[in-house]
Image (cartoon, rainbow over all chains, first blue to last red):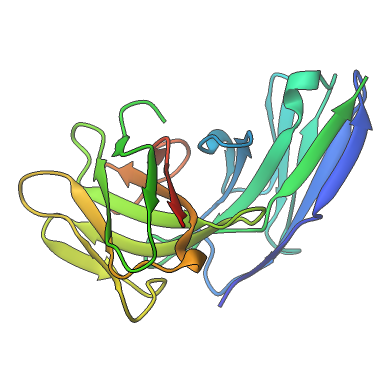
Length: 110
Length: 116
């Protein structure tokens, strides 16, 4: 089976940096995704990591360590519109199933 | 999530009625996935289908729920005799092949089911 853990909530100040951690246990790994989801809306793709290391895309970066079963999403220069849930999801090597963590609600305060 | 069409966006059903949720994948995509999201929770995998085949239904409740993806037309998630606990957002996603990566899986806008 798969266990994917991420914090339930985080609060940060506008302009600051927030790091959302995700740990996973899986038999077979074929990549880790991060999605952003605003309340009442669909998840939107943020990043995909399949190899170890840091992937940077504008204000958002994602890191993966396969040996540690660990990823983080880094949000820099926080804006009020970044208040949302951030979902970590793992793709197994077989079966084509994307399994999501419970999501981390990030609240950005002025 | 452009291109994956779900309807209805919002559906209200009384307990005991049937709910039918439809999903048209992106053009050229033959793989469809259904996920359910209960309030304040993450997305839970339900079923993975290809045209005319159910590939993995390990996340589907054993009773009252069924899914199909016919040769022609949209994928349908059917919930019979709905109960209040079925109230959730149901998301459909599609991919062009059985090996997706990066942003080659696209989500629809979701269908919000409310059972009263």
